[in-house]
Length: 151
Image (cartoon, rainbow, N blue to C red; front, side):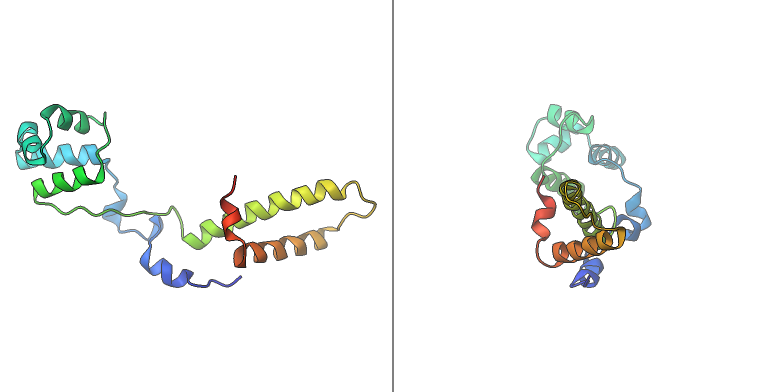
């Protein structure tokens, strides 16, 4: 199967195994906010005023009881004088995610074929099955990727 643009995209979107070490020490956003606010000596009330919300809302956020939206996170980071970076981080290279989905879908499709061919007199041998699998995987990769995501 062709890698089309996967080499290029892997340079732009890093999987977890290619992420910098400092980014792998994940700390939930509510804990980051609490740690930074405390380290800077800002009270919850002061932060709430800067973000134009209530002290209760900040307290609930820091306890992990509510999830802040992106706009709120940006306001908080600005109040701290910090930058905010947001990344979508795949667990592995996108090509591998796609290959896994293709294998899963191809095997699923061929299992239907196997059950219907059980009724026929001549079932395909293992070499024929493997060839069918490879052809189906190629077709899914090149022409029908969107069906991989149908339930």
